[in-house]
Picture (cartoon, rainbow, N blue to C red):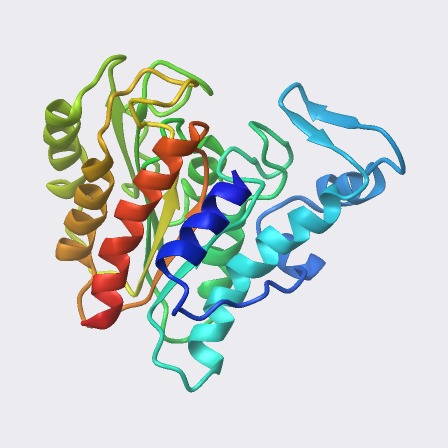
Length: 285
């Protein structure tokens, strides 16, 4: 998956700035994850072979570096935006592993630390950031992100996802403190129905102004993807990006997109390319 993403970036976006992600500081991981859990991850990276944090989430000796790079790069997007005299307003974090299933104290669904959640909580430290929107269009509901922020009125979480499906959360009735907006999609959902439901359950229901937008950008709702049963086309990923930006990205606010799922390489390549094209247009405005 990383090779596919790198091929896309170097084929289509080679004139953009590439930033090497720093390793995350433990203090930033602790912004959203329990201390005992973080210590247990650090202490249970195997010296050889594999260690299972859950049936889907497997560590090898080099895994910790991947976890820390994924978190570090997601946080660095905020640091880079505010600490450099460069007028960048769009960042794409091409990280593995994904993070939106990672709970405060539990690894799930390939994820150990919640990259988007850590970065968003870190962003609230900046005086210019008081309200954040996280939009998750991965085919699986981001249970970890929702649970971490469901009582935080300053961070809104909106998710479209196949339901009922792994991980079992994401019912439309789950509303947090008025900051959670779920858009369940039935198995076999096509482009037309996806767009109708996304407008009804997310676009028309959220009427706030935000200082920062995150995308949890998963491409496993693509019709080619083997892990789910949603039938989105390539251009649905440009549509969903554009409709969010048109309503919520006002006053040139920064956008940070963080890679989540996507398990068919053609679907991942084309879906991500459509997402990035819209972000590129916004960055050039």
